[in-house]
Image 1 (tube, rainbow, N blue to C red):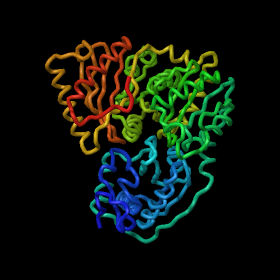
Image 2: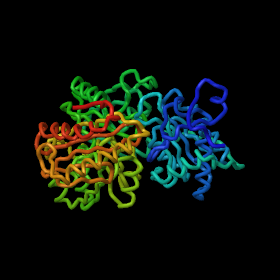
Image 3: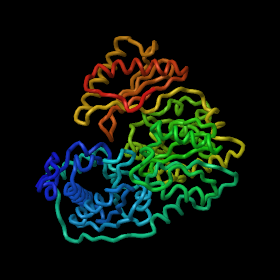
Image 4: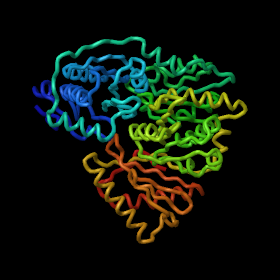
Length: 497
């Protein structure tokens, strides 16, 4: 039977029948508010659907499954594994994990599929599953649409042969893989910020093992997140990291989101460096070792990947692509790029540095190696060496999941009409509008403003950057927001400038 497409709580059917709100099937993973938008039988139906999809793709019926550190994640994982076993899948349960540990387990255990129960950086009350069949890739829109149709149309198929094994020792193997034989040769003092999330069980030990002095910042596991939601793209967490650096005299702060696949950076002067700029710093360093490399950046990222004179001199090729961890992983893989960088703090470090999946802890190790290769430079020195630009944080005005893509389509049309009629943004002519993922409006001096739909939450996403001044950045945002505000269903921003 197909699941019910709405959730009614506190009734007999809620404990028996699958209930799944369709909007939880997103572009590259699944996310719902629990139990408002999905119930446990719905999660089991999702597992049965995922197992059915594995058979359709001709995969060996084995999957690695983990869960993040939230009080309800184990219940969600157990319900998911039940459905997978009903589909005839051999489940290898790796226990609590960060998402990149689950991705690592595909290689370590040599299994074709992975399912990670996590709400990622979303606040408590959310749950979801990140899944993939072709390592190091995860589901993209095609796979998610296929899975949605299998589940919502009741096409799941039960099979004999499902089984369960708990696999111990994956965490230790994951940390060993991250560290290798690396040991710092210069003294380094790092604020380790985990927001009481899953990375609390990994990051402090990682830093200590490579010879870093750790300044703890909310490193006690606590799934109530008493200080803030662990999200290194949010200014609340970045400001807290900055305060810790200033108070401790640390060389930098590294912060991790709720499932450990993203990394945020604050330098030794307490300046928050958005992840796209950290990516440029890393690209400059890596391009000296691997000249002529290709780097992929998401459409929210700084224009410096294409315009930075140092990267140009090293023969770097820049490719701007769709935002989203699955989109970026696939693009890096398709192009044979050395790395991909996303403004949200996802980094995709491919061979010979990493395996191509996003891992905040791998990024942390590589930043430590970068500083080790540049023993006379501080993180602030590396930041100041970049051409100066002024960028907004990622800002997300509310827009319902059921409306946001239609709203965005209308906004893109309005912006294209704005350009066609010769109108300006911040008093500057529009050079072009890139519509690969929303609309990135590029001005005649390289400044830009972006509006796109969030793939994870009921929001749009807005980012602006100017190579001229903070004042121009603000004006770009104000003018772009005037057009955004012509859509009455768009609500308040989560943060703004």
